[in-house]
Amino acid sequence: MRKPFSQVPCLRGPRITLRGLELRDAASLQELAGSPRVYRYLPTFLFEQKYDSAEEVIRRLYTECLQESLILGIFLGEDFCGLAEMYGFRDPLHKISIGYRLLERYWGQGIASEALGLMVSYLCDETDIEIITASTMIGNRASAQVLRNNDFTLVAHDVDEDWGYGTPTRTDKWIR
Image (tube, rainbow, N blue to C red; front, side, top):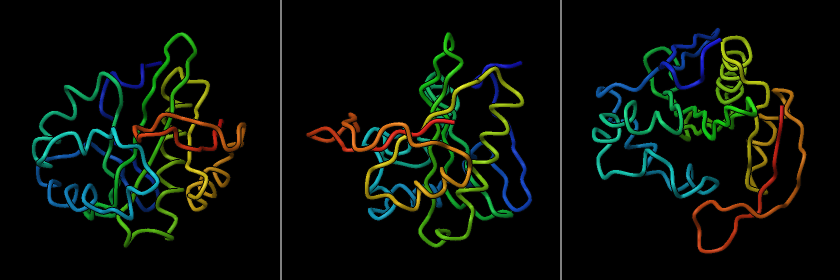
């Protein structure tokens, strides 16, 4: 069994592929990172917003970021749909957290659910991960439904979490 961050995998599903980002994906990544509607339910300290240019993000993504998380692009054919992230790896606990974010035009098409399913399959079948967690803001009902559809269980409702805002963020905690 490999460790989650030992390589950048390419995960293929019936409709989508999760793969490493390339410089040719920069314009789409910039569109995602610049969308206030996409990021209204997300923490402030996301890697794709760490640098001013998407090209710089991609250049640093699999060296600098790979120490803490694995970010893959979500693609429908050749079209960039969003990002899938595995982060918060705790080796002694065999635990990791997951997240996803999509361009608005891909909302409601089952892409987040398929991406989550691919991440779960990869983590459970190809790594030594035993516990997968996720957090959602209370108001993000769509993401909560994606987690329910992928057999995640709500374990804590309406609890404080540091998402990089001035005050703690009220979140729900999920586990699989």
